[in-house]
Length: 337
Figure 1 (cartoon, rainbow, N blue to C red):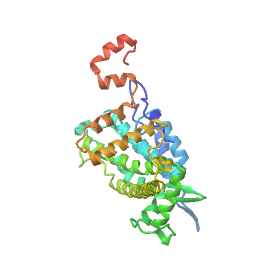
Figure 2 (tube, rainbow, N blue to C red):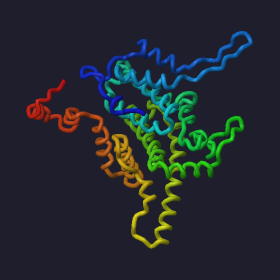
Figure 3 (cartoon, rainbow, N blue to C red):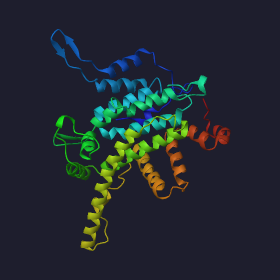
């Protein structure tokens, strides 16, 4: 749903991030659409508040990316995607934020404040809404992880089942055993589900680490509420994967066979069918190295490879061997803009 490659495409060669559209009519229309409609009273008649039209919000956000690269718009797009497409869109959304920051840090909007030593406060405020209890965090909690036979398992259901939040208005929420059962059954239908639940947590941590390194942990947006929630979901996924792998091992020993278990294979990384799948697989490698070989420098090169995946040929040459650009231009006829 979130086309990272297209959304990260430069607006133009002269101005890769376009213009600051904060006071543009289209930007203001997006802000208005995001507000929805408040509760109204006409005499004794009360008209209930209305949620934003999330499809309109997503469409307006996506269209603005053709004119600007703005973290405020990116966050709004992520929120709308969660409401429309569910939890599965969140990994892509977090990756979009990181790739925008890595690729366009100097010219991304909101702009750094040159009067205060390039203060990133406006950018961090935009990203902080991801963790706001009435904004991005609410959208995450309301997002659908699994829809099965007309019933939906929401992030907030998992949160309540694990005892991380109270049930609202004595709502009938599933138990932890119910959550495990639903996710285990869903994972049998979708071989990438458990990977997605785990890798979304990994991507949130990667984004937090990037921001901490870029502006310092004292100034970086605090994504802890999001990361804590994603970590809890990832632990459930790892619990399911671990118990299923143990069951597979026991079955293999009983059958006394050396052949691989097909169901075990299905719970691996899965086929790499898109750029996002490739980045997700690389994230898994980085996660392993961070956990088991923290001093291994390989993860630094892998992360650099991830950045290169969003670049064109000329940008890659400039990134890796900038001194060779003159030779490349002579050989290929390509000219830098």
